[in-house]
Length: 96
Image 1 (cartoon, rainbow, N blue to C red):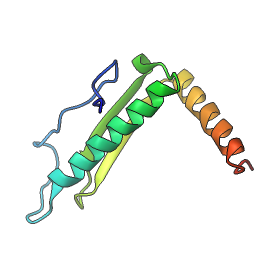
Image 2: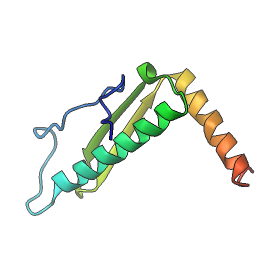
Image 3: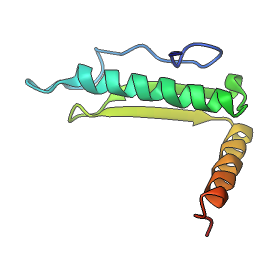
């Protein structure tokens, strides 16, 4: 599986110095889950032809330890992803 930093996608390393850490919260598992989800999203975006130079994915974990995936897009890429989502919704009969 490709990582979010492969093939043009930028990624941030886990910043373990940022934020307040609560004893007993498993932040690493949430971050790992988010990293895998970011890689899956990056793979899917590449498959549909979204320009990788204009996409940034990063994995993190929230205060409760749950994984978080951040997606940053240029306006052009955001419009492209929105169009792809609308096409998919129409094919699934969810267009509204």
